[in-house]
Image (cartoon, rainbow, N blue to C red):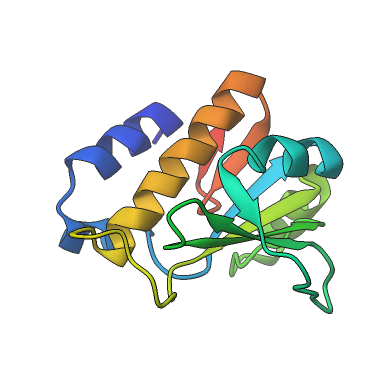
Length: 143
């Protein structure tokens, strides 16, 4: 499935069907890009959460509505069960964004899964605009 087809499927799916498309807590996007540039660009759609530190490094951003957090860090993470595929992705990409939906705040009348889908669409639009190599949920890759 190509990224545009995936985004269309997210748009057309019911909230209950979104998890079948991989939209769930800890949603992973891996990119081949410069960390500082992505961090700066994404700060336009996310708000940096000051003082949040991780043993793995990186920054925590909060989606403008406060309904989704994005942990952005250097190094590609792969949850693929296939060892060769996992090693390939970890060599090919150098940056990870992990999305978290379990926050106290929600967008009124929007499920947590739909909020994640909105963020996924925003990040995918950014990736397409900047022509950044990226994989969404490890299977939907662009370009």
